[in-house]
Image (cartoon, rainbow, N blue to C red):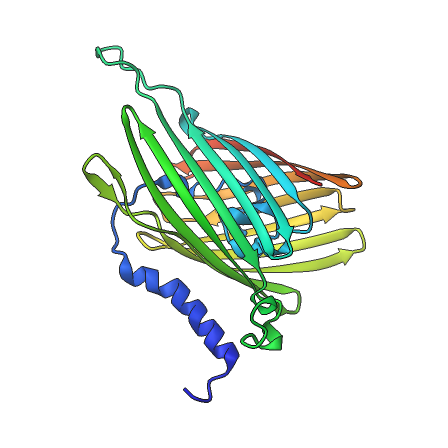
Length: 320
């Protein structure tokens, strides 16, 4: 142990970051499913593959370490029309300061009131409001004596979450924590590790359900096809502590720095097939402003691949 290298110790701690929560949580039913509803358009179009690829505001939802790569202050808004008339509204902000990157977001999930014509009770309303605050930076800036030079580019981040869930006349509250790291592994490959949704159970009336905690790992590689054609490919492995693992893969081809074409695939278990995803993005620059317009299409399959419900996401981001 005395001869163990600093690099080995860092990755040992990273392994504990992923493994320890699994030892503390038992398999079973979880609550607060909105914590799993990552509604980012770019990632959705790429099969929700973003643990290592993320370098913008959307990193809040996958691996907060990606926020350390923010170049300019940014604001993002998104609308998603999901299945069963459920809709998501999302607003996020992020900015790099001398002490690191800060970001915040709010996600509001809502649906039409539930009416029961045969009952005397009033219509039932249901919604969720999720608030997050994130911080990310390169630890080597603050602890150069502890971080070896080969890990000076390592980024780390943390997200604090607060959730309010409303159903009829009842409300439930809980908090959660996400944490992650990212590093350039060489050869144009980025690696990322993250854990998400660590926190106390959420309780409606007398029933308490654990949060949908999970661990994630990802790799991403950027290829320069030509001067005006940049290709990114990425893959993620997602390990829910209460269920079956999932695998994600995606690609993004950016042409002339303006048009991005995206596609991906989500591989889940036989009861919940993920399937193909696709989308596109447009980047317009009018210095000092940069506009991003993104669209993604993600079908949700059930009864095998014979039946599905489409999900459409639209988002706009402004860098200033």
